[in-house]
Amino acid sequence: MDERFDTEILPEAECWELVSRTVVGRLAVCLDGHPHIFPINFVRDADSILFRTASGTKLSAARDCRVAFEIDGYQPETGVAWSVVVAGMATEVRSGIEWADVHDLPLFPWHVGPKGHFVRIEADGVSGRRFRAPYANASGFQHASPP
Image 1 (cartoon, rainbow, N blue to C red):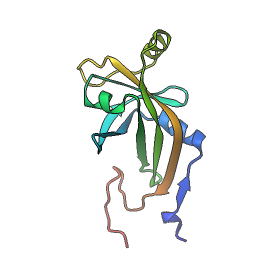
Image 2: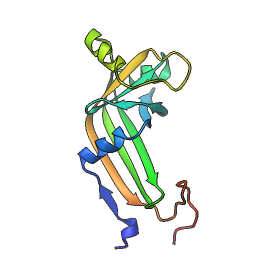
Image 3: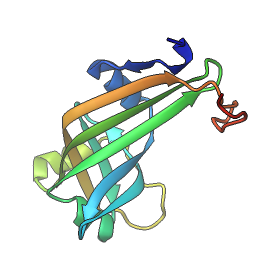
């Protein structure tokens, strides 16, 4: 088999390391039977994902529901791409002790609007893949047609 097309399954520890080095991901939720995906900035806290949000669609769709969270990346110097998915239950941080703990984490909203709600995704599944992307250029976009 041509190694350019091999896919490597990443160990869970490496998935978490990639999560730790990434600052933007996508939150996938289901609302009224329809999938929705939201870009979010986040921080890893042990084996969970923590993000801030305002009241609204994202919070109501995620709170107390099973969600998926995805990050990915591309290394132009090696031509290697990767993707990690974290699945779990999302809950709003409400207890006094946990509320104080999350305020100490380096999690700041990018958007200027108020983001007073903290949501934690407690992971119950983590998976990752690494693969060659031989047709991508330095920015990750395709530059040639596959054979």
